Image 1 (cartoon, rainbow, N blue to C red):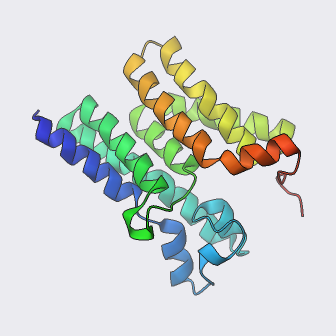
Image 2: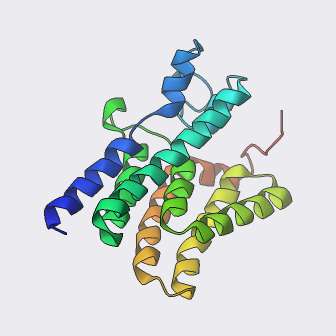
Length: 196
């Protein structure tokens, strides 16, 4: 496999990742501009604030699958290294989409999507930890942060140092994208799941 294809794999990932499903779906549904409500974010959580649960679910699935599909294509034609670069590209594309002046979503769904593409058991682990944390704390953001923190440790424990290194980077980016949530968690003002 040539180095040129590694660049292509990254670009494929970035272009898939930069598709703003939340914005596209809400516009097609005729709701107000997603960036003008709630947090202004383009992810599924903010789509839910429109009151359209179906659109929120579709956004979640779309944001996850764009990571999975990018990884699958790169792996199919370029192998493991290409898949890793596509995963990185997809995550960066979601956080920093060129179409939206590099102002994208927070990345949890895409994080799960690339996990599905690279190592489905790790995706299951992430979701189970998210659910357990959400059940006990009722904080969605904290649940994602805890699950993401454990993910690189999971890969190191099971002997996948390359994937561990990739997910250290993705986890740091995820924490950065949740920096305002972290401040609210520290201040005790973060909204809980199901709270009005």
